[in-house]
Amino acid sequence: MKQKGLTGELVAEFFGTLVLILLGDGVVANVGLAPRVAGTAYDWNTIAFGWAFAVIIAVYIAGGVSGAHINPAVTIALAVKRGFPWGKVGPYIIAQMLGAFIGAACVYLIYRDGLIAAGMPNVWATGPGSIFASASWGGPAGEAVGSYSLITAGFAEFFGTMVLLWGVIASGDERNLGLKNNLGPFLVGFTVLAVGLSLGGPSGYSINPARDLAPRIFGTLVGTQGLWADPAYALIVPVLIPAIAGAVGVFFYDWFITPFLPEAE
Image (cartoon, rainbow, N blue to C red; front, side, top):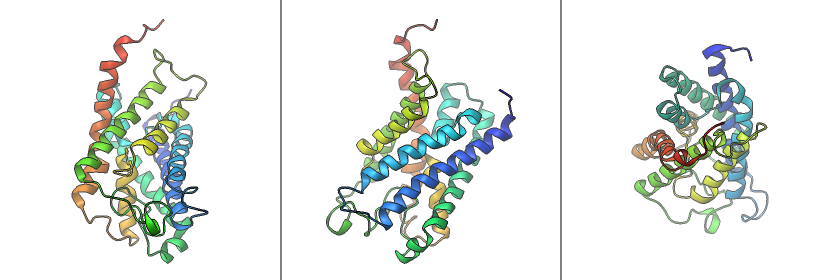
């Protein structure tokens, strides 16, 4: 395979992350702005499946060029424990952030009329304010049920991001079951689905600093209110904690799984 160098990898990371946010934030807007049927049929499950397939498609698009990190947490984790060059970490993250920002802009263009009519609700980022009244999930009239502290949401992001990295590492580990025939993106996507369905409640499962921060900035620019009502939450829970937790997850994999795998032939 002919190598295109760092430029090609950055373009792939940009485009892959753009597609991730286009489809991921797109399903949030679709569910929130236009509930199709009763809340039990078109709700959080739809969002979780939408994000999962967004990941699968994005990984298939960018994987052959850059490895499809499409997530700073993955990039940092692979640099810490899997030999990814540290010199590429900064450029990869910048490309991912730019791709996520443009992906959010595309969602805005697609849903602009509905967003304006609804008062420009938060379809961009996770955490407080990410569930708005016209959505079809939550309690009576779509109200959110309960609330979670920064610490609790932080734990959700920490464990969710570790699980994501376990799926990412396992999908390419030939000493483990190792998916063949280019099926790795499906395991990664279904890992995201599992995190969303099982662990996503307290924080909205960012598990990806670019997925949250760049669309949050875009949402602020187009007039969504409250995105920075709690700056500590916005920067720590969906951004800083995943960036750390991904690397921790790889260490746990190598402590508890790698030593017991059969030797490579």
